[in-house]
Length: 243
Ligand code: 6PG
Image (cartoon, rainbow, N blue to C red):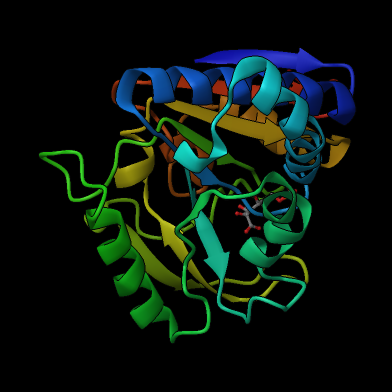
């Protein structure tokens, strides 16, 4: 596990965009495609904007072939795509409408949560990396709430989950309550996992998650422990101020 501290969210997003492209190109060169699970929330939006603005130049200069990228999500809120709370809908406006042909495997948020979770598990099985029924993601982006949740894995939720997806209901800020999430079973098989965390509001929880005693029930972000991959915490100075 490594921790990278940046001056601010802009510097973090610029660096993350460069690394994102490097990982994508390496995956495409090695395996013919790039499988990435995006995060919701506000923190990664600057990264998506960077990728959209730099994509045309990058495609030419570094030969990034977006048609070989496959976009999934770590979680989604069960609201229509055109709802402001829908993560896919937000990312489509910022990124997918700008980078041309690519491959989208969204969580069908219009379905009932349990059905959406089952449908997403089926989608994942189409990219299964034996012996698993789901892909080994090349990159997973995650955020962390000020309560220590990540994706839609919330405090006091069951720690030992054996399914790749779950339908959950949770209250966090003014965000939609009904959600579908990937579980640590899937996340922890990824080759590379990034937490993007910024702002003073996260500093105390971040200290508990990174420096405190393990408490997987209280701090779901601690459940993210890649089996055979890299875990990188990308922080701004404000979020890292108590480390
Ligand atoms: C979501 C995310 C969630 C988010 C954290 C942090 O759908 O909301 O998956 O886990 O990453 O709540 O959100 P911010 O980046 O907005 O602080």
